Amino acid sequence: KDILWVLLMLLILILITLATPSLMKEPENFRPATPLVTPTHIKPEWYFLFAYTILRSTPNKLGGMLALLASILILTIMPKTHLSKQRTMMFRPTSQTMFWIFISNITILTWVGGQHVRYPMIELGKLASFMHFFTLMIMLPWMSTLENKIM
Image (cartoon, rainbow, N blue to C red; front, side, top):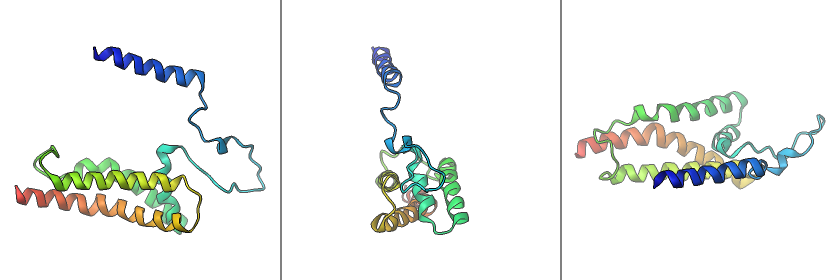
């Protein structure tokens, strides 16, 4: 019963991929490049946009690259920072709140990464980048230890 829907979704994915491979791509990326002019808007694929926003919101180049690497490395070590004794989030409303803050922050970072570099997007990118690091490095372990004390 479930395998039918898995196969159906796989068939739809294969049909979309083989029939129209450029359907989900950014049309701006297909313009011919000229070596004398810097493009006004560079937009990576959607799954890199959150990291691109963090790179873009840091004023110097080395700091931006370090922040970009740190944002990706933080996601890999995030399971190690989960210090709560209980693994499920069903009975932990503070962890549920932190999870949804994290999801909304990643969504904001992804959206800002797709926008042009202008005044409100620059400030929003800086704020969302700060919240990304603050949520994952400080708030998440703190909430886990707080929930351990409550339980």
